[in-house]
Image 1 (tube, protein in one colour):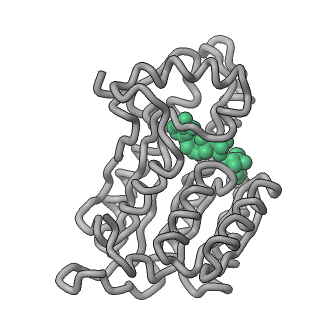
Image 2 (cartoon, rainbow, N blue to C red):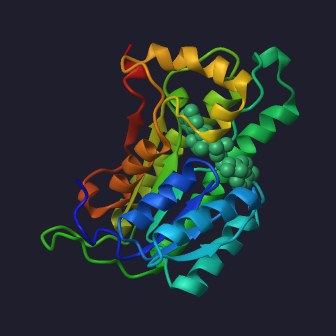
Amino acid sequence: MLVKGLFPGVAVVTGAGGTGAAVARAFAMAGCERIAITDLNEKTLQQTKEAIAITYPHAKLLVHPGNVADDQFAESFIAKVVKAFGRVDYAVNCAGVLGIPMRSDETSLAEFDRVNNINYRGCWLSSRAQLTQMIAQDPLPSHDPSRPAQRGAVVNIASQLGIVSRPNAPAYCASKSAIIGMTRADAIDYSKDGIRVNCVCPGVIETPLIMEKIEVREAITPAAQIAPMQRMGKPAEVADAALFLCSTQASFVQGHAMVVDGGYITV
Ligand SMILES: NC(=O)c1ccc[n+]([C@@H]2O[C@H](COP(=O)([O-])OP(=O)(O)OC[C@H]3O[C@@H](n4cnc5c(N)ncnc54)[C@H](O)[C@@H]3O)[C@@H](O)[C@H]2O)c1
């Protein structure tokens, strides 16, 4: 269980119209008072804001829509967050797309670039802007005075498909493996700065996008049955893993790819 007062700093969440909405909500539920959210989809982003504002009025929310694949966006978003909230302590990079199901010989360069530009390059651009801010700020004390202070924590959302693969998804699987590799490399580089960089690798998660479209639901359901737990995960289950990795309770967890998949990759 997360102890009280674990999130005195500022949280930033990308992809906050999807699983990122659950992450932003979890930060608010855990008492975080400054939360910045972004997504390409302004409508779902606004819905996330309204849902949090009603239930957690203590939370100050900064809402800024934008495209993580745009190389100017991440820096302008973080500049806005720092202007409003002063710093960035916990960054969870959830923005991503699934891609059109195809084998490599059927995949166009445009589709390959689209998936990688959002998933891998977009995650790198976002985390680069977050890390640039984190190294420039003073650390915050740990919840446990015997542990080192923390200058920041980044959690990138990869996928179980960054570890194992599935048919017809070469660009997606590679984009998620790339996120795991980038996470490990950043963990090495930023340890000396008191910054931790980890990733979460979700399995099949019951997001509105999957549940609302019958054809997607029917395609995904058999994959969920492969996992020993034989069900889809909830966005809140991914969010809880991300919050643990952001918190100082995870003070010695560095460069880790935490799989949250009901056991899928163990089979
Ligand atoms: N749902 C799953 O089963 C599952 C499994 C493993 C990993 N993931 C990963 O989890 C993350 C969240 O996915 P989700 O399931 O919540 O899907 P989702 O589609 O519900 O959420 C993804 C969000 O990213 C946003 N987004 C897409 N392109 C963007 C861009 N260019 N700039 C900014 N925002 C953009 C979308 O608008 C959406 O709100 C993704 O990185 C996805 O790859 C999902």
